[in-house]
Amino acid sequence: MPRKKETPIRTSVKSGNFRATKKGAGMTSKGVKAYRAANPGSKLKTAVTGKVKPGSASAKRRKSFCARSAGQMKRFPSAAKNPNSRLRQARKRWKC
Image (tube, rainbow, N blue to C red; front, side, top):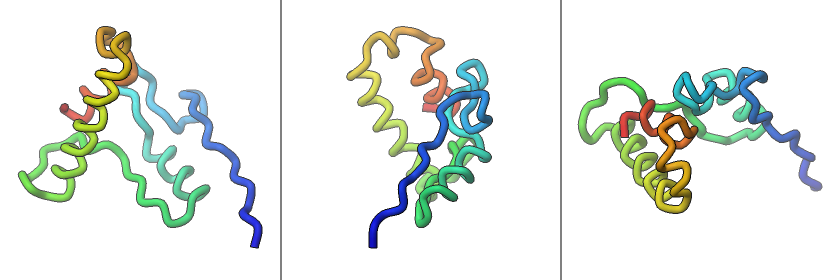
């Protein structure tokens, strides 16, 4: 059975799927719903922004994101130096 051609999710802030950099970057809940509709079986979730219990699933997701994004900080030093970059703003929102 041939795979259905996927329409890529728009990465613009205008589409409402992503937050503006000044608002913390990252995907909105609308964007996550759109992604999951386009990719059945996906387990994508929004950012962990609140207080979490140590060792909980949310705390583990946050720790994992912070570890991955720390690698991006090493790979993209220009983004790491700029406090207004999407990377830095997303890390701030996730409380890394």
